[in-house]
Image 1 (cartoon, rainbow, N blue to C red):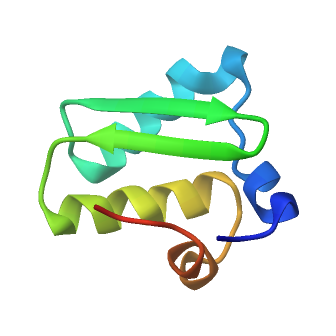
Image 2 (image 1 turned 90 degrees about the vertical axis):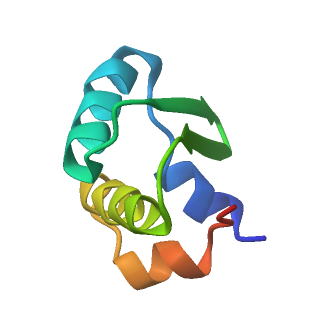
Length: 78
């Protein structure tokens, strides 16, 4: 779990979701990526390896100007 304030920083407004998805997928070399973004939760679903997951996290951190380590500590990977 993490704070609501941190989760809110990761929110992707609906009008930016397509652009953000394309950038994340391109940076992580994924052909498939889906985003679910609410006011206090962001979920990303993709098909790939653990290396792809790390690349998506790095790209998401960069997209939101958040330290990669902070993002890793506050997310759940499966």
